[in-house]
Length: 258
Length: 213
Image (tube, rainbow over all chains, first blue to last red; front, side, top):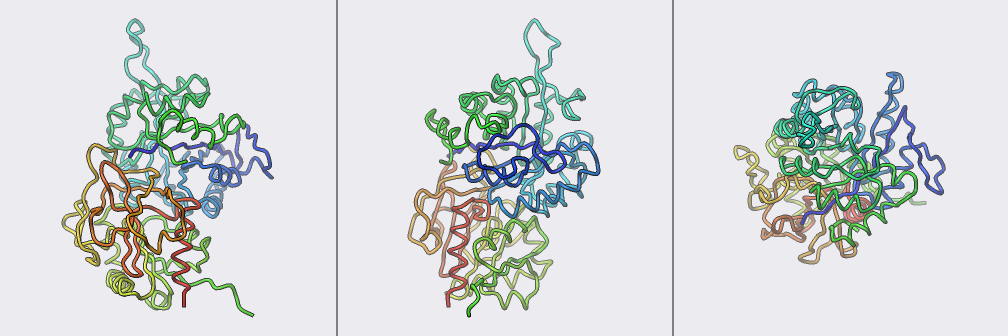
């Protein structure tokens, strides 16, 4: 039985949650640990904490945040952002993270995937891919997708399907696939992209980028064939609870943990 | 005056993976949980936990390198005979068997009969998701949780659902062994320490068994 996962994503800058968070009854809406515990209580299947700290002096807060999260949250959580070496990964996993997500550093040096997997197991390694549709052949629509790095600023020339396959062969346990074309649009996942990757690799694929409604979550699973759906704003702004998301998925015939 | 009783639970630390979250979960469940490779401390503990993540062969190598393989076998056999409780988690369950298709050149601990096979090719591997358990017979482990029981799995290999002592299975391209119980020997293919409130209840049942006179 394939059971879809619903994964809220928190963007964290220097140990504080950024992007609006609109929960009632939180003592500190900027505390990632309190929010993580709240999502856990609401029925989130996993959590992704994405560290977007720009300054190097803010970085030390990440390990502390992971340690505090591990003390209070008893569902799996992934930490991503700025992980460049096995040492970085080790520090975060030892602090209590269940998985690390690598992106730019894995494109720069793909062996990083194999190195983390060798020490901690494939299940610890999430390879995050930021994808944008190629537009050269505008007459026939997009011709595949290209991998971007550095938070989506830098094109790599890599084909998304090829890179996903390579990442899997190096030891990725999961692919976190973000459509840059859809991210922030609230138009729904790029289900064509998601399905293309999910049908290529044998490991689970998390769809990301574009969720604006609960129906989009359904489409990510049924049309995009994703194993998990990640969303940020629909949860953070109090529009929907994770519980509502699950009820909607269940009503649409998608199997989820209640 | 009596102190609240927190039984000493030895979580075998043989240098693999991240054990901190497991330790935290056992503490949350009421144990005095220690990550240790110290035979004296393990001998003093009221219960023993064998965790494990990653490849079967790598875990077996690390367990042997830490000189904990015989400690684990003795503790697991004693638990099966009704002695102090023992819990294997994920690859810690898998290592209790005779071997695994994942690492054919490595022997397992051989406490349980059978070998692990790869999950069916019709499914994504690893199974990395929550799944609902089918409780196949009454057990201490599941005595305190209500059906349906949802728990978190991460694995690509599994023991036979028809094997001895299997008390719960899940459906993943066919039935998969999810938990075994034999005397006081318990093992779970899923991660109770990552299975939210349900997982904590299961760990509490284990800690209660550890604390029983």
